[in-house]
Each structure stands twice: as structure tokens, then as C-alpha cells.
Amino acid sequence: MTQLTAQPGASSMPSQPKAGLLTQIALITKRNLLVIFRTPQALLPPLIISIFFLVIYESTLGEAAGFLPGLSGNSYLGFILPLSLVSSALSGSSLASQNLVRDIESGYFDKLLLTPASRAALLLGPILAGGFILGLQAVFVIAVGLIMGLVSATGLPGLLVVIGLAILLGMGFAGFTVSAALGSGNAAVTQAASFLFFPLTFLTASFVPLELLSGWLKAAARINPITYVLEAMRSLLNEGWDMAVLWQGVAACLILAAAMYALAVYALRVRTRRN
Amino acid sequence: MTKGSIVVENLVKHYPGDVIAVDGVSLNVESGSIFGFLGPNGAGKSTTIKILTTLALPTSGQAMVGGYDVVTQAEEVRRIAGVALQDIGLDPLMKPLELLSLQTRMFGASGAEAYSRAEELLALVRLTDAVDRRVGTYSGGMRRRLDLALALAHEPQILFLDEPTTGLDPASRRDVWEEVRRLNRELGMTIFLTTQYLEEADELADVVAIINKGRIAVQGSPARLKSDVGNESINLAFDDRATAERALEELTALGRAQLDRDVLRLYMESAAEAIPSVVNRLREINVNPISLTLTQPTLDDVFLQITGQSFREEATGNGPELAQGAKGKTRRGR
Image 1: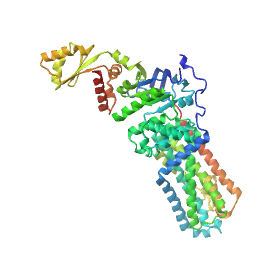
Image 2: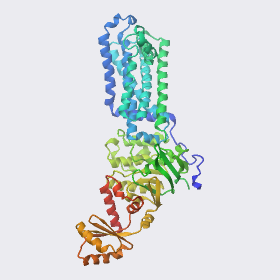
Image 3: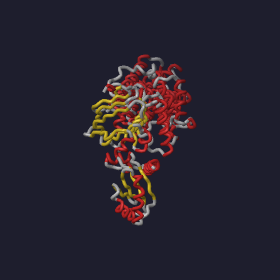
């Protein structure tokens, strides 16, 4: 059986047999965005919810905020807007995984697996597309905040950093929902999994500053990465450039994103195991 | 010449729970040929194609696709092989050129190259008119053709088609057949085709293998397989079963007779020459058939002999199309 000897290399292949990693990531991200914008109505609910929270919190708690010692002199709008951004990042991040679930269900994901697409591109494509959408959402929420009278202590640069933090945090969430999508291949399970993160937005200094929390809630808030992201955003909006607080927020986002990305890599490996 | 060949040696695939999907399959597909892989549902066709296209690993045995090992050189296999799976994997929200150019670019083409290649492929499968429509609005046949175009995006030397015409209307099936023949003839592409339509294998394949219960039962050219089963038959249709039974009694001496409702089949060698005596005998007992046709053996007969079941019963929900296929065969046999 002479035919059974393997060819040593890919000598007869074209010189450029596959796209480079960055090109792959760009292509898959672009494709995910394209599909997201084909169903723009899916973008509306997360936006409406975040604006709803912003308006409700501000009008029910805004007046009382003057009595809260931790907030003396600060605007409650600048305090509550980050919470609205975080919940918008949460609900928006499931967009990334919804695309992936649809691809798995339609079989298009298998088609991509049969191309030389790298695992990183298959994962980062939907996550980055989700991040892009989250950026747009954050811009929108902040615009509404500005209309309501928000004044940023750090000006426009601070607002851009706030948007960056929202995107980074959302991409961490997206890593989690993408893992759920890969693990289940099922839209309902993926949607349900994205709700798992919601308690995190309450086990933190959601409505009052951290110092005013007590007991187990304070302990929970201390280990919740969202606490540090909220503090960084609030400090930028209400106080100014406090680098220590800012770096804590960035670090919290990065740790969460790295852990969730690792989970997604594992979920993809399980899904593509050739058995 | 290994470039477009497929060599499979003693391939075995077990699934958990002692399920043996593929049980020692060996195949040799020559470069540039069309290979038809037939079998009833659950015989191991899809598992074999999954292993050959690197989507599944074999439990044991070896498979080389275009000279590359499907286990250790999966990436090379993917580069020279195009695959259109039974479940068409197309995103309904995307438009054809977007799908095609993304696919082409993943294989290293530049943006401009990919776009012109995408247009070329779309013209090849005659979907240029539907260029602005989302795939979700396509008919089954159009989707199948676009899927075929996608499998061709990176100019593969070997094309795997898993039941490419299942669920298509007869006209779309003919379109796909024509396309497959053209790819094979003009580009010298090796084509590995699984199908549940015997007529399809007969039309297209140079060599056919029938898999049953995970093993290759028979392998050879359609003509040889058919001549191995042997006999031609004379088919006589009658008004009712009672008449057919009287004819059966009279004619059973002439050859192996089989009664199927009101149709009587007589299997014999050189059936054409026997027609006058059949007609004479029927006249003697005063029975007149509604129709008399002559049939040469089909792959259906080969299949029946090997698996002990009729292919027509096997292919659920596609009865009418297959029956039509069988009629076509009869006409040609005359």
C-alpha cells in the first residue's frame, strides 16, 4: 500500500494557504457585526433597560442622596450612571453568544471549523463584536446622562475611559455567555446563563457607597469585581483622576475577562473534540 | 498519483455504549473519479464521511485523503478537501457574496481576490440573480447550490458531498448532478458522494460501494454490480390481483416470478427474446396485460440482494421521487 505513506509537507499548497490571525479575527468580528446589525431590534431592549434604570434610580433616590454621608457634595447621577452602564454591559454581552448559538444551530459554525480559522479568531470574533456594540450602548447611556445634567469631573477623557471600562467589563461577561453557548449549543440555556451575572450587580455598592454597606453584603461586595469597576467609573465622574482606584477597576475587568476567556477556550475545546 | 485519491484501510469507529458505527471499512478512490457511497440509514455512511473530513477521529484504522493522514494532518486535509455536509450550514441572515468571500478569505485570499472569486462561484452555481437576497429567503435547491459553491471556495482537489440532493425536487437534483459532472470533468476533481438515491449513484458514480451494518458489502462499477445480480425482467401489469395471479400460475415455469400487487415480474436471462412466448401463453389462458415493460437490473436490485431490504422502503418520505427514478430506468432499459 504505497499510497498510505503520508506526504511530508504541504509542498503543493498555495503560498498563502490561510489568512493571518489578525485578519481572521477582523473577518470574523466584521461578520458578527454585520449579522448583529441585520437584526437591529435585538439592540433595543438592553438600551431601553439601562435608560429605564438610570431614570428610575435618579428620580427615586436622587433627592435623598444628599443625606448620604459618602456622597456629600457629589451628584447622585454620576454615582448611579455607572450601575446603568454595568447592567447594560451585562444584557448587551449576550448578543455575542446569541450569534454563536445561531451559528451552532444553523451548522455555520461547523463550516467555519472546516476552514483554517484559529480557535482564537472563532472566540474573539463574537466577543469583540459584542464589545463594539457595548461601546455604542455606553455612548448612548452617557449621552442620556449628559442630557439629564451629568457633569464629568474628568471631562471628555474621563468619559472615554468610562466607556472603555464598560466595554472591557462587557467583554468579560461575553466570554462567559460565549462559553455557555459553546457548552450548550442551545439558545434558551445561553440566555438563562447570562442572567447568572445579574446578582453580581446587586452584591455590590449598587445604590450606596461601599462604606455604608455592612455585614455579609459588604464582604460580598469586596470580592465582587464589579465593585471595583463601579468605583473606578464613579471616581472618574464625580471626583477626578484617582489612579489607584482607576487601576483597580482596570485590573478587575482584566482578571474577569482573562478568566472568562479561559473558560471559553475550554468550552470550545470540548465542543470541537473529535470523538 | 496520490493528489486526489482517498485510501481507507480497515477503518473502525466505536461510539460509547458498544455502538460500532464503522466496522473495518477499506476503500480506494482513484484521483479524478466519482465515488458513490451507498447504504441504508445508520449503515455508517455519515460517520465515515465525518472521519474523512476530519470532523471525527477513527477508533482504529487509517485514512489518507489526497495523501494526507486525516488524524495527524487534519489541517492539510481541510485545505485540499471541500465538504458539503447533509445539514446545510448557512447563516440565513447573510447574503451569498458575504458568505463566499469570507470563506475564500479564510483560506488566504486578499479582499479583492475573494470578491471576484465569490462572484465567479455564484455564477458557477447560477445564483447571480439572487445576489442581493439573504440566504434565509432561498429555496432548498438554491441553498444546496450555494452550499456547494462554499465547499468550492478554496479550489479543493477532493469534494465530499453528503447526500447532496436529499430533499430537492427532481429539477434541482438534475442541476446538482450536472454541476457535479462538470466539476469532475472540467477540473478533474475527485468526488466522494454519499446518497440514498440509487439512481443518483448510477447516474454519477464511476465506482459504487454499498455499506451495510458498518461494513462494505460490495464495491465496483454500477454496470458490473448490476450484471452480477444478473437478470433482466419482464414486468406485466394487470387489471387486478386475481388476474395477475392467474398469469403467475401460467408463467412461473419461464423464470423466477415475483408478484407485487397487480404487477408480475419475471426474472430471466435474455428477457427480450422471451417476450413472444410470454405473450402467447397469456393469450392461451385469455389474460391481457395492461402494459408490458422490460427492465434491466438496477442498483435497487443490487441493494435488495445485499441488505435484504428494498431501498424504496428504506428511504422514508421520498417514495414518489424514487418511484419516478425507477420508471426512468425502465425506459432507458428498453
